[in-house]
Length: 120
Image (cartoon, rainbow, N blue to C red; front, side):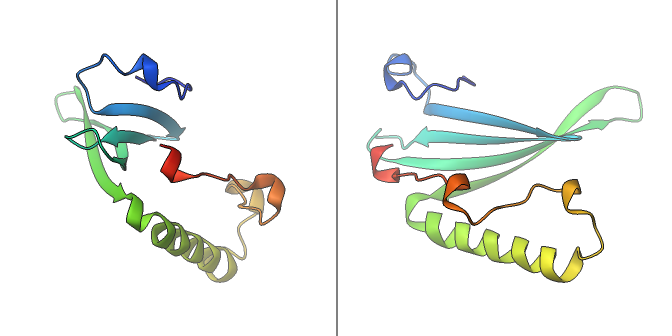
């Protein structure tokens, strides 16, 4: 499932609602960005899952998972809110933290990704 391909034909004969997925490993956590189809296969949505490995008292491991469902009508507001919160934290709370300890979101056109969600 975790292919860096956008070839829908690869998924056309699957019985799943998964279309495309991108795992992002970040320290002890992994974030999964999954594009899925609705039950009628006529629309798409995004799920963002945080998965964190946890060790149990008996030494075994389990995973804590938290999931957000994000629908196309909310993409812009979600992005705007996330960018605003990150900018606030950088400007007001992380002044003394060296910038190399977190990724910088640049405003230049070189680093923006132009996504047309109607194409999904």
